[in-house]
Every structure is written in structure tokens, then in C-alpha cells.
Image (cartoon, rainbow, N blue to C red; front, top):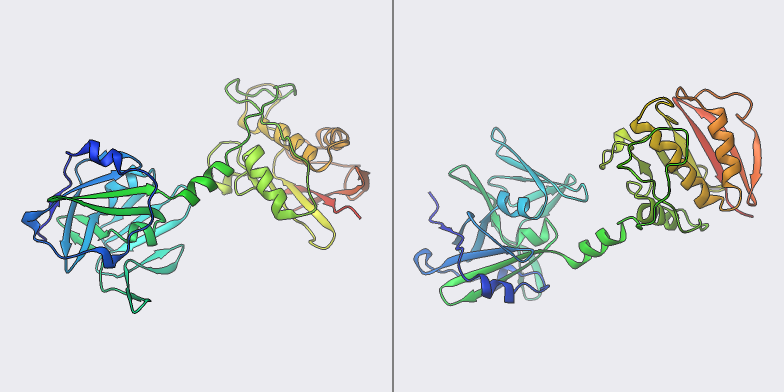
Length: 338
């Protein structure tokens, strides 16, 4: 059994003083120490974490995986048969760490758990994930290289203080994806929960699809800037609206619906769809969006059946607009401006 120590719960004041944003630590900063000489404290995002085990071996400091990623707001599942921990990060990155391996799978790509520099050349270390007493441990460096956290290790007498924080880049990305807090009214004939308030788009489309994608993610909260799931959350498979780029040569957007509403007589989660559709139309057609909305709203039913509006070309705000029946849904193609 590995000789390991519980993470200490003392020295909180010292930990807080050290909790500012810090660069990632490298394996070359470690040195072997006796287990009886050291205790450990770990702080995640400024909070002291209790009930975690750690050990040092051959100069590599390893920490119990599950409590740390859980404290960072990620979800972790353990498969005892394969000895693999699967972590789903908040940005939907999937990380798989398997016992006795020196690499992790990050979205199915191999990433080294730990490296070191020799003559300014980064080379892999032999450090592996280790299971002991039913707990999976990884090198502390892996929290940076694999999970993208900021990591720093500080010595304070006989104690090591380990700071693990969400990186600045991830924070900025998360903040950029946070919808603008501008909301509208429930003014359509589709009963919707009073707890839900429709967001309002405040920008207008550019001629660049990816820039538009970023705006729609920030202002309307579309998943990856492309999908609206009326149930909430990030499950793309439950999305009822998808914004693609259609024919890249001619179109700025292809807006696809697999439902338009759920019920006109009772509250239904799918009744959010017309509200979101209207705001997406407004984004691309700031002057004429209401004309397109009325065509779609009058032409579509809950089964997405339409008649006289299919395969006809309209011109709104200097863009050509065509509605087509594709598969189980309806797609609206909006052209680029000439």
C-alpha cells in the first residue's frame, strides 16, 4: 500500500494569501521527501479541500483525483472493471484516466500526465495514475496538462500547499459565453412557464459565420452558438433549433427547426421555440424579421406541416430567404448580402 498522507485542514489563512492566479507548475520543481516529514493542504478556487489523500514518490507528488475535479464543478464516474475514471468537464470535454497508464484520453486524444525538461526539451515522465485502496491518484501536474487548471505547489515548513484553480483562459471563455442579461416579454399565444423569460438579441449579424456563432452563444445562450435546447442544459440531442451555415458560398445561415411549439392550450417546454426563433430572425433581419416570423408562425404547426411558403424566395433586409422541408424539419436559408 502506498505511504500517503491526508490533506491537512490547517493553515487556511496561509492558503488564502496564496490563492491568487498562478502559473502552472512543472514536474522539475518537485523533490523527494519523507512521508513522515510532510503534510499537505489543497485549495481549489480559494477553498480549502478536506478529506483528500496525497503521496510523493520518486519526486512526483500525486493527489487523489475525484475530490479535486468534483470541487472544481466537474462530474466523475468510476468504472471498476477497467479501472478508469471518466470526467466530464463543464465545457463538455471528456477526460478518461486509467490506472497504471502515463497518458490520459482527452476527447480520445492521448495527453501525457506528467513531463519534465531536460536541456530545455520537454520529455515524458514515467509517472502513472495509481489506484490504492479504491482511490485513483494522478500526478499534480496532470491537473494542468490534462484538465487545464492552474496549479502551484508551495512549501511552508513541513507542509506543502497545493493551489488548484480554474485557469484564466477558461474563466474568460466562460464569461464570454454567458448570455447578455437582456430579456423580453411572454407576448406570444404559446403558454410558457412564468419562470422562463425569453432572452433578447442586441446585436445584428455580420457576414462572418463564426463571429455570428459567438454572438448567438453570448446573447441568446445557444449551445456552441448553434443549438437551442428548450429543456435547458447542454444536451445537443434535445435541441429543437440549429443554426448552421447552409451553402457556405451563398448563405450566412441555415436555421433548422424540428418543432415550432408544443401546445396553444397549456404550458409546454417547446413553446419557447417561437420566442427563440423570432430573436434569431431578428439577428439576421433586424428590419424585416417580423415578416419572416409571421410567415413561419402562420405556416407551421406542431407537426411542422406547411404549404404555400415552401421553396419560394423572399427578400428581406437585402438578403434572399428560402424555406425548405428537409427530413423531419423545416430549414430557412438566409443568404449573404451582395
